[in-house]
Image (cartoon, rainbow, N blue to C red; front, side, top):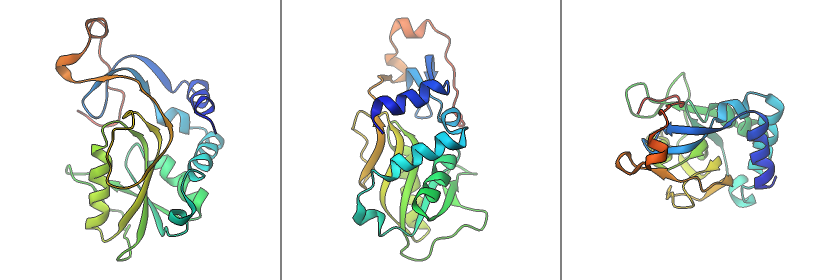
Length: 193
């Protein structure tokens, strides 16, 4: 699946939004990718997961024991990646600010894990999720994501295979351009900043 085909999936589902958005990272942007919308159609979610699974090198793919994703954003694509790879899919939650496996999920000691995210902007949530897997006894071999918004700058500490990389500018709180500042800010994600 090409970058244009991936973006067509986002556009067709109304998941590529324009305006003034505060991202989960706290940064501001004129673009927002609402992955929940692109993944709400099971056939589309399956197509995207299959394309994402094809990005994983065979040596990593063959060594995996489980798929783990952070809730909320990674839940649906994580589940679909588990289906595409024939692996169990679990998710991390942060009920008190730190990621943990809950709901009876557990990893065997030394389990080889694929981390699955919807969007990576700064990589902070991914690094926190990878650290949580290590605390739970597993080892993250690689991460995949539908979208890399970092411009290739996110250092996750593991190989990273996004389906598409986008270069939508983001801005820190004091750096928002005046034309963007004039638009009321929206926080469409699942986490308060």
